[in-house]
Amino acid sequence: MSRRISRNTLSGLLLAVLLAVMGVACSGSEESALPDCPDDAMTCPASGTSASPSAGPSTTDGRATDRPTASPSPTGKPSATASTGTASGTPAAKAACASPGACGFPDADTTGPRVPLTPHKTGYRAIRTDGLVIRGWDITGSLDIYANDVTVIDTKITSDSWWGINLRPGFSGLRVLHSTITAVPGKGPDNGGVDYAVSNMGGSSIEVGWCDVSVFGDALSMGQGNLHDNYVHDIVPFVNLGGEWQHTNAVISGGGNTGHLIIRHNTLLNPTSLKQGASGSIGLFADTGVVRNVTVDHNWVAGGAYALYGGDKGATGIRVTDNVFSTQYHPASGGYGVVAHWNADGAGNLWRNNRMSDGRPIHPEPAS
Image 1 (cartoon, rainbow, N blue to C red):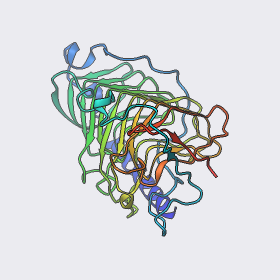
Image 2 (image 1 turned 60 degrees about the vertical axis):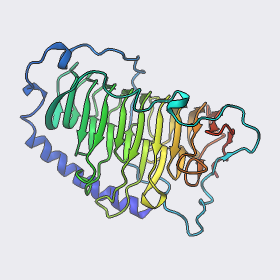
Image 3 (image 1 turned 180 degrees about the vertical axis):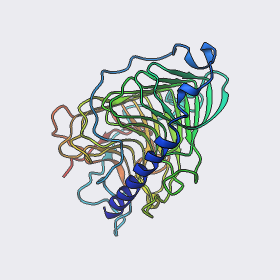
Image 4 (image 1 turned 135 degrees about the vertical axis):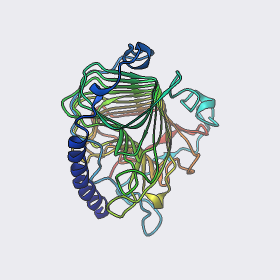
């Protein structure tokens, strides 16, 4: 527990200093300085999008402060406070899946840009123009969004900052579609590590769809949003500024939200080993408040200490349906099991038709 707190305290202070410096150093390098571009390069209407969910507040930027540790216990077994989530030995109710792509889940062939890209070495860039559409760019840098209704589509971002794309509090309408978001291991500000591919610090819902996401430790970080058809993979573990292994998650939410978080039809892989900070593939943590109103539907999920952290005893409105938990990294999907901290008695909570990749149904144990 202490290693997370020391890391978060130190890195949080350094992040604040770094952002303050960025705000001064980069005040003259906002998107207003970008050259005029033809419609299909930057300001064209977005296409191939799905409707974004209604807006809702958030109180987390995804930096967990009190999540369960991913380090092995002295006995090598999960603690008594974490439910393991077991795969039943009954005959398979559904056909087995050999791989995500073979069974219709997102992979490298179905995500990322669909148009030729133009290189742009932007570095850190603050975006302050409402309605801006960035399309067809191969960006070396990161985008910090201080505007409404910004769309990033058919674009690649290679970041060495805390994030690839970040939405600031007080702004809404961000969409990130058909894009590749990755980072340079060893070059990030968190002692060489990088934290968030897409971070929602704001109080509104955002949409992330058909994106190829890799490297970032907590890849998709938000309290509410519509995450669909994404391929999250090849998370790179790192020792953070606190001198400890950073906990890693393909999707992370810290609780306290009043909006709806939808996680639907994604491939979410966390190959990080238990000794190098693995947390979850989907981490719903009550770090900043009660976890509520989350839909986890029809995803391919693998890896982490547990593949899914379910929000703990206070969680409500958590619907986990029709997901496939793969054994590609661990026999139980996660190193210790499929699911931990599942609140079976919470109002509106539902666990239905979830199975292992070999077809066995999964029956979670309740949070104790």
